[in-house]
Image (tube, rainbow, N blue to C red; front, side, top):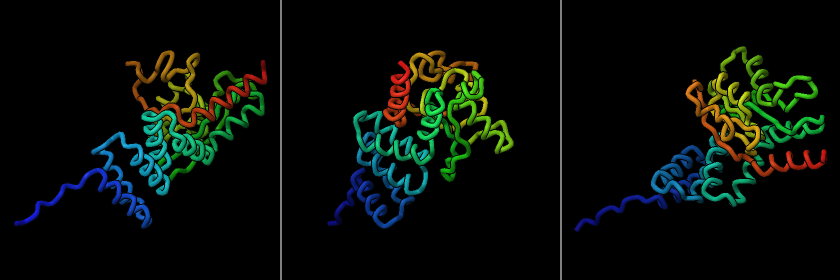
Length: 233
């Protein structure tokens, strides 16, 4: 009597992914982990493994999106927060915020990244005081710089990272520039325009809304802001 073949389970695909990862076959491992997650979307071990494989392929934006999903499922996950901080430190985001603070500016940094190769296209920190310009928020400056460097007002396909939730002005600029994804750290209940306030991307007058991932390296961003304002009390 012929034995029926057992259907592959999410555990089988996960184990297959681990084996492929161990062989340095990161592309194939990514696909295996994704297949496991198609069956069990909230499996933290598979999400951890997927993020690690994505980072090996230098797909840091995808890895950060995966890590954001981990934090959504488990806000206390230490792996996720450590990974976020490492990625953003490498991209220069936190150093930009620290440099702004050193000049007396509110410590907010922003970078624009090409997700195709992980390269930083432009980076900037707040400069409203040093430039005597109330519009010189980090996000505005980094968009202007990237547009100038690339010779285009449209930055479609690029991702913007900011340490703080963008205000309504910056959210509008992000929309006009056609940014692909927005990643931000600390929420801004008083001045934010994405998840708070006017929620620009949710308005009918918004013609382009990027994918949004909040809470990226939130603890590091909050610490910078807290330390800055404590010194000025």
